[in-house]
Amino acid sequence: MSILTHGFDRPFDGTNRLSRISAARRTQLKRLALSALALLSMGSVLTALIALRTTFYAWRLLP
Image (cartoon, rainbow, N blue to C red):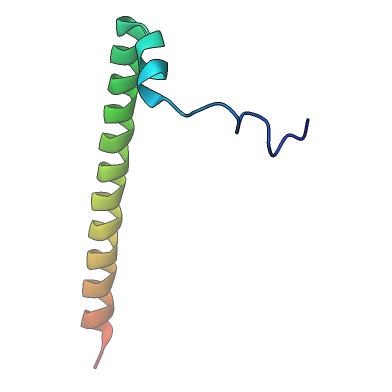
C-alpha cells in the first residue's frame, strides 16, 4: 500500500484520539504549549523593542 494513501480508508475521529491520552499527559502537553506560547510572546516583545530602539538611534543620526 502506498504511503500517501495509507489510512484514508479509516474515518478521522479526533475525539477518540483525545480520549486515549491520559489526564496527566494532557496536562503536561497543555503546560508545554503554554510555555511555548509565552516564550514566543516574549521573543516578539523583545524583537519589537530592539526594532524601536534601532529606529530611534537611526532617527537621531539623520541631519
